[in-house]
Image (cartoon, rainbow, N blue to C red; front, side, top):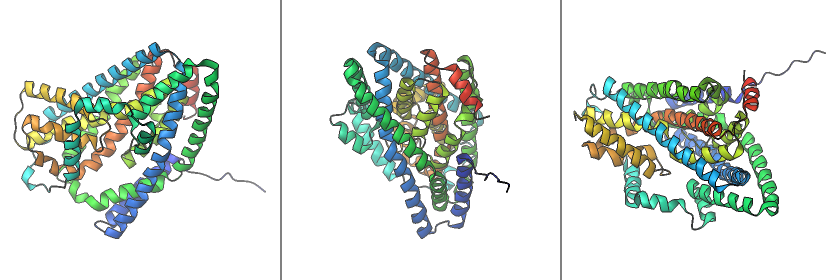
Length: 423
């Protein structure tokens, strides 16, 4: 009897089908409170599953990675390189967004008073809290007073800070620390196995999250701001293919190979509008792509907070869009000031919930735009958030390769074999 191999859809295709079904359900169940509540809860359950595994993976992988580095001078060099690279790419992203907004004028054709406003009270409260904290509060917040409380609250930067020092401490005690490294390696392997199980629920989670976004907002909300959304997406695409493509070329690899390897994660990040949803798989995949465990474990979690290229593009376009909609003509000097303010506030608000929108709240007043203007684009924030999250994920994966190659901690042979497995 002849056996036929059962055809199975890859996870990427399953997520794509989930995304399409989510759009269909969102249209069918528009303003249906029962369906919205159901989809919201299912989507939240999936995100909670991801959040459950993120911090154990970060702690175990980062601690082992730093312990394998063993040298605080090397760690300092890698950290400095990473922060400088993040800052340069973010600045280019902001500048690109501002250039596009100046050339295409997305706000000029909009009658701002004809748009329907959305509630932004939650962002206002977060912005006030973040501004009250300030840059010194942000820096102080990186140092945990209680690591277990930071783990419980899901505070990424304090966890990274502790893991770095814990890893250096393990390296410092030599052979005695080997038992901890073996134990943490085992924890990492277990969590990657759990990640693979959780990923089977991704299509359902994606379907629910897309569905609830459209069911609450409706397709009609996109039409007046369609030009703005289209410009944001085209600019993000150009940034990935051109700017990131040039950076990849400089460091001797193709951006398309990278995109091929992480295509499933890009679709998942886009669908869920959550970088956390792909963080565990990104750590696993970028290690297989060729960068050393120490580089991957440090760069990706740090980039999750500080390297938000997609968010930077959106913030610059949105700020100029609102200025144009209110007929506020900004001089070159004012726009340079806006660029600097965006650079500072985006870092000062790192880790704040709804950070992109909160940064805009903290920034637009400097160019004379009323805060009420943000109510008109709040409704489509989720749609743009999907794109900027995908860009952030690509940017962080690129950063691991760039830093890995600059430190000569990149396995070219391993990378070629891994890329070939996707072709």
